[in-house]
Image 1 (cartoon, rainbow, N blue to C red):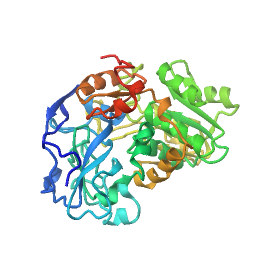
Image 2 (tube, rainbow, N blue to C red):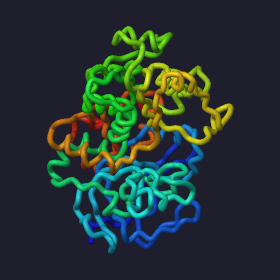
Image 3 (spheres, helix red, strand yellow):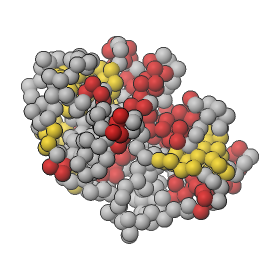
Image 4 (cartoon, rainbow, N blue to C red):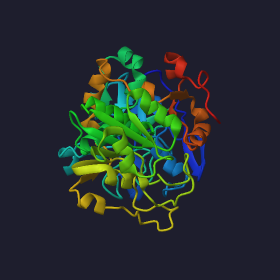
Length: 420
């Protein structure tokens, strides 16, 4: 059964080589089965075929685009997907054709030990190489991504978050499309850092995840939120949200800078939302070595005694571009002496997306307007990757079927062009 039956053609954003993706014809999803990395073969009668309405470009995708992972040519990118269900497998009971759904980026089976313990981000069933699976990402199982006209999601009843009213969901899609990854990820960072009523917070990184984290800190009751970054345009977005900001190009000592803002050189909570490329060749800072994780080290310095650090910026086992691919020099003594708790890892999206959706749908929470969203067509994706690589203050949202641009023309690339 199909909603607006497709002609079985499909196109997607395909990784070619370092600094290059192309839009190509790719296989249309099938319930007959799929061969994944490590020789894992999955039958997918428990799955659903999704027609993406919004499929976002993530900062994590940029690591692969820059050649900083072992992503293989031919990988279809995309793990931030919101869309319509156009077909369901014979084993699917609760998800129906026509449902509007958010697709969590981490893929769970709902049956393994970790999923049973609500550790969805480390599912044991969907990646033959290691715990945890995701769409369109290196080493995450080989699942085709969703920067495409159609995609497959397995275990649909378990993974998909259904919005109760399609019309209302479309009216709030700019915020709801953040539920697949960056909003729950930013919220996860705040929770890991133990943010609560009255907390003082430092967020390292003013990209989309960092801004979602800052908004989450306010949602959780933080009294002061400081955001640090090297890109002034991104810091302006944080100011609009009500945050204090630190232009790290001008900061000589992070503790002194924090003290100048809140009268204390330490904060209760620090959130790392930038990842292992914070000193790499992108954005406004191009001279430092590849392998210095400055953002995390800054968090270690400013986190106060018995405070918390939440790490959601991406770190990988080995960085192909680093002088020492397996070494990230961290100043851990800063934390040990203060008794700071460090927690991190991929956000278990299902743990947060339903509750965050309620806040959005009840008009209690908005964040997309601070991210400078730019809705683009599928064929504009390669140029958007190049633009994102410059550190531009945009959140690129791919609209493969020209549905979102009709709903929100003010955010269309035609209305707000980007550097190509």
